Image (cartoon, rainbow, N blue to C red):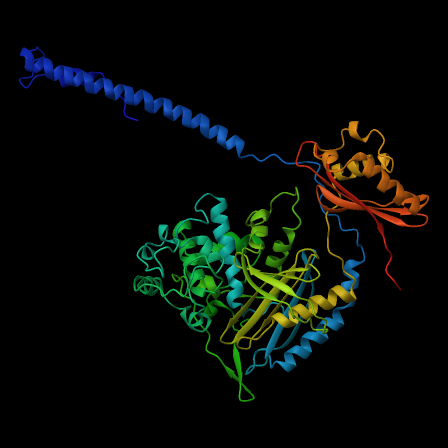
Length: 567
């Protein structure tokens, strides 16, 4: 804001001779112009002052409004399966046998694996060598290049910057990377390339695994020169999934530009350090020789050592696959991902918000359906797959959800896979070119679930569900005074004539006989669920959903006889 200095007014009125006298019409016109200009300046100044004051007030209101209110009665997950950990530990010999057999069959020089359960590295195992020549055995602290498992760290960094208000996912990539402004899109109607396109492998870039693997050492200058030559698109952005290392290199570049720090430094300070990942690295020459896993290729019935790929400090390609980590420390990262589920009122303690982690796990871009998929035990179970933000998503025919990402570079193959509903995850790192670790990880998790008898974690029923259950039970089966009870949403009796409700419920209760027990709610979520009414002769299932009103009211209800399965 510019303040008007009154001492300057007389100076503006002073004529060229230095006199303060008013000489003739010219001076008068001059004075009128000056007064008009001063009036406009004063008005502008006052307006600016008012706007500033209003903005401050508005800012305070906005700041206050950003403090999110929430339901303090929300019931966090409470695992009552006290024998869960001991049952999983009992399966350890089977898991180790599976991994060892897989390593032998697939010619893995070295292998390190770890099982994360309920926030801890519960089981770990190792086989073979990090260095075949020196016979250095693999340990859980051995450092392997994890290749594309690095991508989720890049996605997490982008979401952290988004949460801080420094970028938006639908921002144009060209807003941060000037070299992207004049790219030639495949079609006239193609949308502008966005950060979200990059995160979900839907940028329209061609699949580039063989080529991308060899770009890690490129400098920033080389990357910018590449971009200036224009990118060849395989599709228009936003219409199809196609895996792109280039896309994540661009995300790394955006992290550098927006944060003001080199990508590698930002990941170390904002993600690795808070999680206690002290030994993780980008450049292999910084790793102690006795900790570094050398990479090998199995060819002509022999292992051939692969040259390790450098990571360039000012380069962007590390964002797609340069990270070097151990099972011991990567398990901390996995535990953080698992801690995001289910949503809760617990304090935030991680490098990003738990809601942002869950956002990474969502199926944002569909990429496949496999109707004939067979689990390792031979059973057929179809699955659908998609890509989230830096992570893959898969849901099978039983509704089991997996979040995972593989990694492959010359000399290395790896994968991590978590099951948020079960609170477990597995990671396996190998030093053989493109070692396919996804199948063994799936086999191990499937085996653990079966042998340890694990059940998916579910949040307990909300207080309002339990309240509505209790109130509903009291009016069944005759529905006496139901219309005036205040339990039902305005649509309910318009959709369900009370005479029909009474008739059907009475028939079922007569069939059930004396009521022995009403089972607890089985919630699907905070406002929907079912419960069992156990009768002397038959059991009944009651299902209801609540409306979005406050307080929530019953909007839908069903009741049916439970037919026991035939022996």
